[in-house]
Image (cartoon, rainbow, N blue to C red; front, side, top):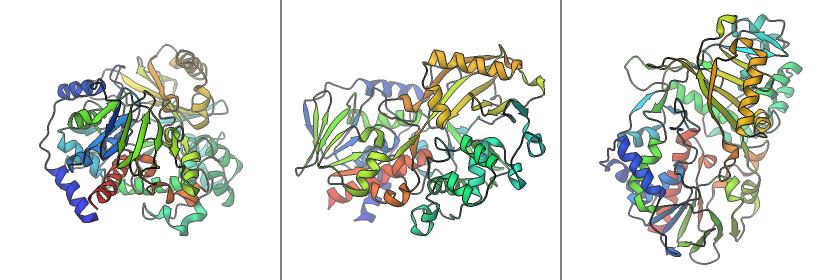
Length: 507
């Protein structure tokens, strides 16, 4: 039955003769935002909950297979964490922004919908460090008196201390290894890992500041090592040796000699063009403004009840919302054991970013243009100019506890505070930045974080069990990935749930 389902999917994918221009996509997205008046109760074969990439892809594959499906999205916008801020200067990406050469599903969908992939223009200018009130350029860091790390630790830049030191102990060779019990000893915190290997107090301090999670205690190294392993696989598609091209939370972008895809790509016009194109095909399958409040799975059919009083009955449900949202939905009956623990306690990491334009160069002060700081402003990314631009762009990036702190304030107060701090520690930047906006996913009520984050021990306890179907419900979303990461992980999970549902319905 599995092979038959896969053939159905592949046939549906390859037979779609759809090429839409951007105006058509925009009109389609607008029409989706105002669907016809919904019935008080509807019956369908499948209800998909969540209009991010995972939910959209699952619904798309099911519809192409001839299955009647309805997609419910709690907000008025489709796309989830794919969100291009078209109304801001430079149209930054609030969420998903990187498409690697090995993102087979994403690339295939872009080809189907006539979306052009272009090299990502987010290369960073050189990055200095501002540690304990002292400036050190990247090239000077290994031998600087400000660098209190020991031995070969001293070669690691502060912004990369967490990821690079952890990477030294990554034994995974395949992206699926993280679920193998043989690697369960790596399901520990970054602090425990580095202490186990005898790293210096300063290395522990800098790793805590630069940890991928909220701090060096909150995230499982095993989960993060899986992403490192997957990133190496993606880099091999571009013949890039990681380490030489690495920058904080990204890479210098490289296009291959045959003018193929770059190492990192965007969609021309913004990544939101992909969910808009998927919306255009799904049409009236989508219902927006449908926040789910309860799911009853006690009968032969499941019933999904929304807060606006509407309800939907279906043979199967695809739950493609973060667990931060699912744990607010009343489930009857309740999941048990490891799956219940995952739904209730899987963590989510925080990232907040401010965006803007560098109106005038300021790096004549002898300090590298970008910088990492142990103070209020965690990372300031000065970006290389894009072709045709007259000015450099910038992003101020807060992760973990730094994001938690800045999110305590209103956007206006936070931006004012950020600007004052930048000008205080680096006077040459005074009056040379123009902020356009600020955004953090943890402030979006229906999402609650920029991405999932397994805590130490959680991969071992429920990493496998959390995605198993429960009653009539199947689980999708980037947090249920097995192999991929980023946008490709969302599509991986949507494809998996579509196959599961088709096997059930056809069986």
